[in-house]
Amino acid sequence: MKTTATFLQWLATTLLVAGVSVQSIAQINGDHFLSPFNGQNVSNVTGIVTAKGPDGIWLRSVKRGCDKRVSDGLYVYGSALAKNTSISVGDVIAVNGKVSEYRSNKAYMYMTELASPQVAAVLDHGRKVEPLVLGKRGLSPPTKQYSSLDRGDVFAVPNNQSLVSVENPRLEPESYGLDFWESLMGELVTIENPRAVGRPNQYGDVWVVGQWNTSGDNERTGLTVSDKDGNPEAIIIGSPLDGSKNPTDTKLGDHLDTITGVVYQAFGFYRILPLTNVSVVESLSPDVAAPTKLTSEGTCKGITVGGYNIENFYEGDTAHVQAVARHIVDYMRTPDLLAVQEIQDDNGETNDGTVVSDATLTALATAIQTLSKNATSYDFTYVSPLDGKSGGAPGGNIRVAYLYKPSVLRLRDANPGNATTANAVLPGPELLYNPGLIDPANAAWTNSRKPLAAAWELADGSGRPLFTVNVHWGSKGGSSSLHGDARPPVNGGVEDRQAQAAVTASFIADILSADASANIVTLGDYNEFAFAAPVVEFGAKSGLEDLDAVVCIPTAERYAYLYDMNSQELDHFFVSPALAKGVKGFEHIHVNTWLSYDDRTSDHDPSVAKFDIC
Image 1 (cartoon, one colour):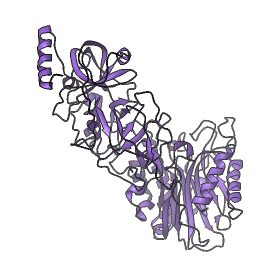
Image 2: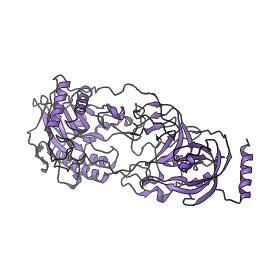
Image 3: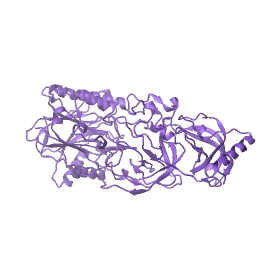
Image 4: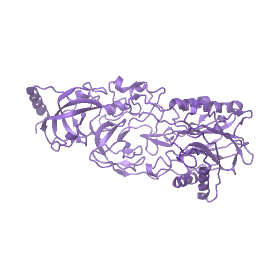
């Protein structure tokens, strides 16, 4: 076998004699996101075959360059080439083709590839192919910023202010996550000692990190999203190149066997396509978190309040009813007051005009009573939405609701409103409707759930009133991926949530205006991060405080939801200054985020707080 120097000298002489132009892999990639050769035909692109897949092969420069911004890997797209058994990993080949920037959706980033390939020559065989080991020799992804185009905040509002495909910035792989992965596009890499930081999708694609610096590490070894930090150091492991299947039951924190594969771009994310399937080495224990330590004292000295999005809940799914009831009994310890979200009507997603959910909530209350061996009896209250006007699954008519122990709490002068009547704050303060919806005709609530405000008092008449607002703001549907073309990424529905925040906050501010010492808790699914504009604006306008911050829960432990690579918190408790002084504890109960997709009961974890309202 020729030495590299001798081989390259021979190769250059041969190609010059042949009178053909040469473009290197590094030249094709360049030091920006888009190739300077995009759309051009190139000849005698020479590289070592590092991997073969079902639709193409990957090449690496025969001699790697020193510019960290420039990848020495290249994807050559062509199924005929992939199926050519005369070409093997370790071969050195020269290929002609057309440089292309490909993406399957305009929201995605482009991937540089060589299309319509023709093999000009097979120049050598048996070259040893060594993967680049991520986390070593300076090959560690940044841990904070995704792109220079985000201007320091990947979650900034307004978003979608520029496009990578238009700006095409020069790569800075030591500063920005997208630049790092782009600088390795097409390269064969290895991740040693990887761990799962998300649960896999239906195809087994799973987010991991390896032996490199990470930020936002929580006790379950996941990565918790935080202000301006969306964890760009994580990478998704996609479909294996050998046709094997990744497991679909991988869990947060699972330790995995070493992963070797090629860096690729598909379905909106940079990813690594492994040579073979992911293998779980060890899972963490226990499977779920311990039950809450916060239990009711049954008096104003210590009442418990819980919040739980129970995901498209209706009585017809009996297994789901039992599973939710078990969480409430065994892990939430049957709080005195429970705000639930995503309660469907009594026939679920059957779209026939039904809007009431009495039977559905009765089924939940009955299951709780049975599982608690008659120790807990709940009543419930809610306001039915107008048919087809609250979003969610078609026909389901989801709404928020309260369950409460009548032995401990009661509605203060109960006077329920309806789907079109707006609640108001009266002198006292008292509520016009109890419970009642907040400004249901406001355009902010188009195709979304309206907050349900209620006033409570202890059944024995002791203590001070407690005002609650149960929210389920508009979804993040329509968001682009954190790896997407738009920068900062599109935060779907953020303008709606800002409007909803303003309406909700105004109502609460009216209560505090009437009584600055009022006990108020607003809780539920805000569908937004605590540091994002809608929630920040809500806190500022309402006068309420984030309960996570009040009780000093560490930032990395503020999560009750798992999405892509991020442990995150969309469900929040906000409390008035007076109630903040009476807080006796607040906990997130991880009964779902630690489990595999099929084993979870809801996509959210519940939370429980305890207050002195005397």
